[in-house]
Length: 58
Image (cartoon, rainbow, N blue to C red; front, side, top):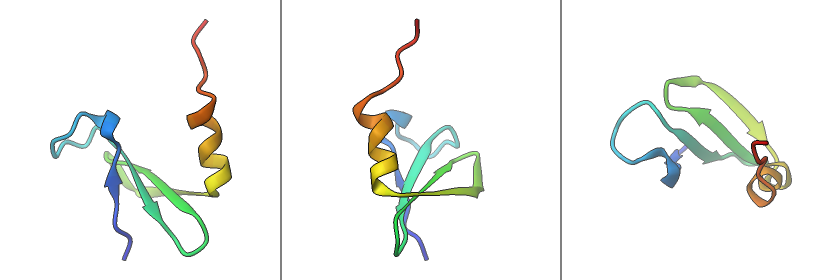
């Protein structure tokens, strides 16, 4: 069973308005709190890219 960690940018609390991160045997898992059944599997390198270089709005 995957243990999920809520993003610190999600405002805390138990609401569904959040992004959660989990770990699989081969990489990382992402899901949104309002759709917990939709899970994205990503590599640590692909997850690090938008964190290091966030897109800036024009």
